[in-house]
Image (tube, rainbow, N blue to C red):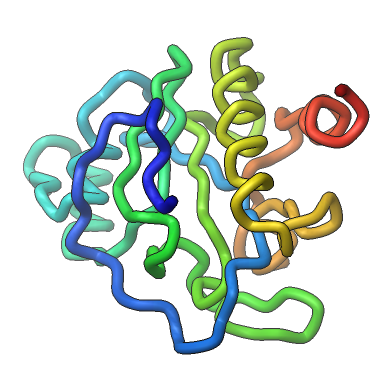
Length: 179
């Protein structure tokens, strides 16, 4: 139940167990590009697997040693890599709160879109995100339309992703208005 069959599996060391009796009830959409603004690099996978080489790019020196992960990354070509099983707690949200409940990692699934706040996401990414989201909604019924949010929604003032380029209407219509 906690592995998306269409994803390539790569294990991140940066996860742990969710607290007991804490059901998954939130889907958080993020964006990431490493180095910032560059796509199709090995940086994201290296960051989430703890293998980032700080010497490869000056920006990497500022994030070397971070222990972060997401459940999945959707790359520009639509391919999906899963780093953490959905029933486990990935370390994606940081200091966060949703509807008064803190520690969003405890009850959220984190999906990273390879991109930036202001560059449009690709058709392939939306197709993959919609497919993955439908699969998750079928397995985690507490995730509803109002519980699919951006990182900016759970960490306002600290995070801006997935940014102005993300088409929320497209995602919600595909998930909740299309048969």
